[in-house]
Length: 305
Ligand SMILES: Cc1cc2nc3c(=O)[nH]c(=O)nc-3n(C[C@H](O)[C@H](O)[C@H](O)COP(=O)(O)OP(=O)(O)OC[C@H]3O[C@@H](n4cnc5c(N)ncnc54)[C@H](O)[C@@H]3O)c2cc1C
Image 1 (cartoon, helix red, strand yellow):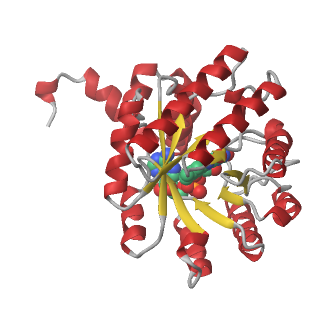
Image 2: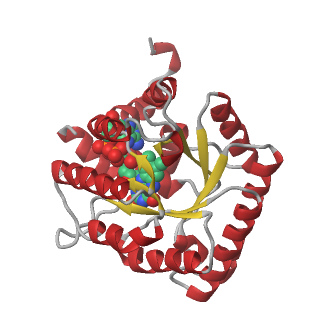
């Protein structure tokens, strides 16, 4: 990323929310479940699967966790009603992981059971490193209780991940592998772009060697290529590529045209701000988009080309 882009990334929290909302609009289906239904059905028509995320981050009160769980139940019901090729991705802290682990466990278990009845699936997103142990433990408990329609996420940036893969391998988990979005200290996380890539490939090799159903979540061309070399010849139901809504959609279309299974992460809801910031911070052209939006509103329409 160029210097100016870095400066804009650092100052994004100071950018007016209205600008963030407009510039980040392509990353979000909309604010309602109907928006998500429409976007998922368009993706399905183009041969792309989806995973639906009800936007929301860490909650501080049990009622908020109950409300998120209810929104997810509605999302699962909509997936069934519209016969969509979709599952859901949840953030354990939005289900109360840090407020009341018992409540979190009950809400997630009920949602997984609901997904199971409907023939779909729940992915536990991985959040920052303060939640890694509790999230893996939650996953393990669900599996030990006999639930199969649930998967975890591993972050290649964390130094512990290869060991975590090895520890869970006997359960042959369904896994999403990503780089990891959270800023973590050097002591526990790789910091360099290349070392994170190397770790990603090593983790991917370990997952495939352990016969885990593996979702490869990246827009990084080099990693997509490394992944395609590795899944060549594997049955199409043993892996999928995953991307975020609004990111490298052209590359996604090419993957599908080449016969690869692709799932797109579709967030919707009122709590769009934190998610939008994270996506903008990863967009290498963020400065241009933000500047264009701000200037576009400052310069009267008639004087624009
Ligand atoms: C389906 C999915 C689920 C995820 N789930 C989690 C999770 O549970 N936990 C977690 O910590 N992280 C998660 N992530 C985020 C992930 O960890 C990375 O932060 C994110 O994918 C960016 O890394 P990258 O591999 O795409 O590589 P990058 O090096 O960040 O991106 C590669 C290229 O993709 C393009 N690109 C990337 N992001 C953008 C953007 N926002 N706008 C425009 N272009 C862009 C650019 O061309 C960039 O050069 C998920 C990602 C995906 C795709």
